[in-house]
Image (cartoon, helix red, strand yellow):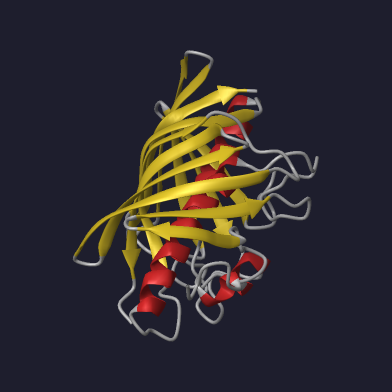
Amino acid sequence: MLLENRYYRIIDRKAEGQDTVFRVALLPDCDIYQGHFPGNPVCPGVCNIETVKECVEILTGKRLFIGFIRQCRLTAVASPDICPWVNVRINCTPAEEGFAVTAKMSDDERVYMEYKGVMKVL
Amino acid sequence: MTGIGEDITALIPQRAPIIMVDRLESVEGDKAVTSFMVRPDNYFVGAEGQSLAEAGVIEHIAQSASAFSGYRARMAGAADAPVGYIGEVKNFHCFRCPRVNEVLHTTITMGAELEGITIIKGETSVDGEIIADVQMKIFVKPQ
């Protein structure tokens, strides 16, 4: 895993109907914030995309490749100050060569990311 | 021409360890071309040290657009590169992950700006082979 225990840490995981919800802590000491941006720590949207991929890898037990993202909306600025933890809700169904994945990253206040795409099994 | 081939930190607000573009190679009208070599110590290269993760490809394309915006801002007299955020990633295709030591060339096509949001298209190739393409909405923070 590229970002687990470096950018985020999983603190809880539970099934809710067809979905699985990972609660993850966003680690404020992650070195990515030295550069994104100096004096203004903001979660890179792509790190949240990678976090979704890693949660799906944990869920499925497969190594995956993001072949296609239909749409990923980054609807609010996230940072460890704004949201020390977030819920990553994953819905994942088998599809050709891999999984169709819908995901949402949110906390009690707001939605940070909505994601729809296809991940292929490596 | 100012900005072309210049130190990239003059054109983008990102700093180490998340600089994902090396050079702005050319600008012509609404198109720009950037280059980036995948180094083994890149943030988005995994522990196996073989290839750049898809998220790294997306960030490279976003920073290529950022360098293009930075170039335009400098031409307009701005001192600092504007800070932009990805608002949306749409129809991203990744055909393969680039390997360490490969050089990416990305063509950015900049669309119209509306209320601080710009739609861009990016296409990334390695030695003429297209490895990824995407549309993005980039939100630029007002200075």
